[in-house]
Length: 238
Image 1 (cartoon, helix red, strand yellow):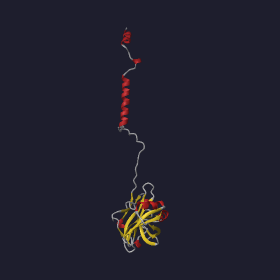
Image 2: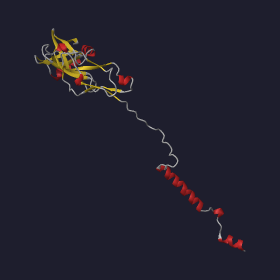
Image 3: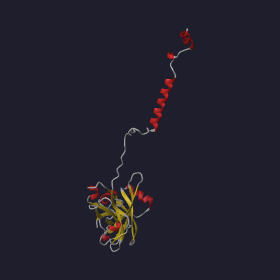
Image 4: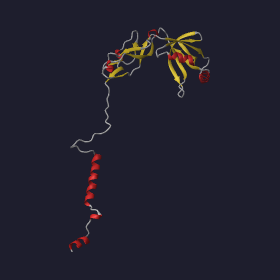
């Protein structure tokens, strides 16, 4: 279980105006809530928050210090400005160390699959997180999945996973990782000429027909220099 210290201050008032003032001061407005904690408005220094989140995962527990009082919390939601992508609000869920909690943990794949290394296959990982339920003390930082022995056609499903002291909530039939055969697409840049005895392509046949017709018309119609008139024939007879 990974824990990261984080310091915040209580906000005496809520609402949009208070949130705007907090952002102008370089802080992020937020809220802390939980089954044993009434909702409270907080403000966290923007730089401190980004530094803490940079080294965290979805399963990280924060030791949130609120004006001298520590609370164990997890980060439930981050709201971003749609234009600037700046963090504009955060939600923390206060947890009890004696109660199971539903949380998602990251999946990390270990090793190089045999089907990829020696058989030219492709590894596809539809799942990147696994939903679990357990006591906070048993939350793993991540789930490592070894793919070294997977060949082409092999797959690992949620039902194949097991974590000590943890209940897995994700659907058992979900595919975690699969090794597939490569797909090869062959494309010919230039079409081959038809073999002897084969019918030419439609465009080629039309062109050939046009050339033959032109040659026939040229042969049937004599030119002016070779045409024999009736007057010339009469002179030859006399």
